[in-house]
Length: 516
Image (cartoon, rainbow, N blue to C red; front, side):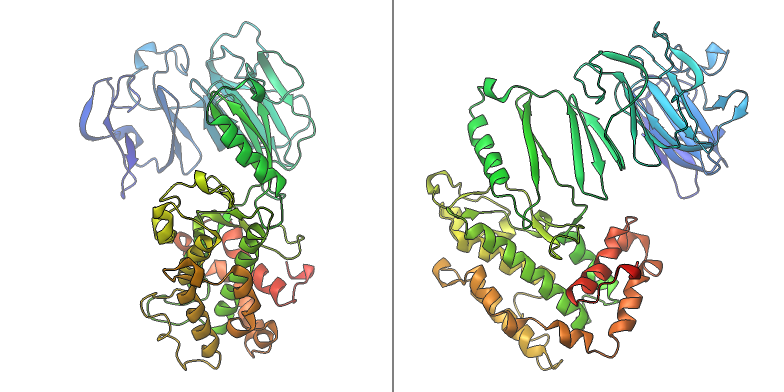
């Protein structure tokens, strides 16, 4: 274990068989010890492979320690292999690093000049040096991409390497035993960077288990390559059940659901390629109060926040109604804020809410396959524990989701807003409906369609919102709200704060492309 304390000093503790703690030996360390060579170096990041560790400073310099003999030797003094962290140099100058990634036994660094250097084990060509002898590279070596490409990030996996360009193109090289590099060649070892055809706008790469995923966050597309096992050859008793569920999800594709693109089996595991949505309702609920400058425990929602919450609920009800009105009806059985995602494609009828995680979903007619206790306990209807689950079980779950979304105490749901606003009666009516969704007898619960039909009783009209004197001011505040909120409230991704502004613009018909 390596950690940086509040004084910006690095300490090591625990296993140290390869000297990777940088303490000058390879013995177990029972109490934290400081790496004195790194004192005052302002270490900001720590990266590791299987037997080595890389330290990055605030000035973008690198230090390395661990098993650096043969595979990572950056000095002629072989006696220093287990001793102390030493600075990494490229062509006799200190490295200025914009990005770094470690594989099992190799390292890639991207400099501030958009040059990529690699060193370490080259057994599978993962350094990209074009050396067909596949000998270890002991000092950082410049990698040639054979063209005028601006590399913006690098990614290493076990024995594979990837580089992403500024326009989202991807180079790959290294071990290709399952065709996980995505290249047109089927060679098992690729010793120089190969540009993957037809990939554009890629922002992230993830690889493992013989497959690689390429993610385009702008379009929410995920591309996959690697080993696909012949699905017809599987004898796993769970195969038919899993494939039937996945085929069903493909069949009922809709703007209400996260899109499933394809699926495959590998080593008795089912892998599903699906639409990427970075924001969940759970995260929206966590952010909603601070975004609207509200203390959740002591302050009430304003009409703007209440309107936004109602519109989210309206879309959620419409998603679940869609499933329930299919023939045969489909039951989700695990509705909760984590399984309700927020899409960012505003071209799809101004819809944001999408359902995901259909691992427990079934056709309502298949009652004999229902498992008692399916789903998450807090959101699961009581009758499910008796082996009985109908569409009203999903409605029960929605009742508890409403309590989360509207920051409501389910024990005293109506007292909080009574006569406080001129729209308090709508809130009270909504809480009456919530009480109905939680009835012990599922027959007494309303359907999603019935709740939607009553929306004029519990939801605010967009004209009421746009008629507020401070409407434009609040929109402007939301547009720039990320400047004022702490990072631990919003996170670092822009969609975490941008959602609220975009959502209100669209729902109030005030959206204008020029506002961005």
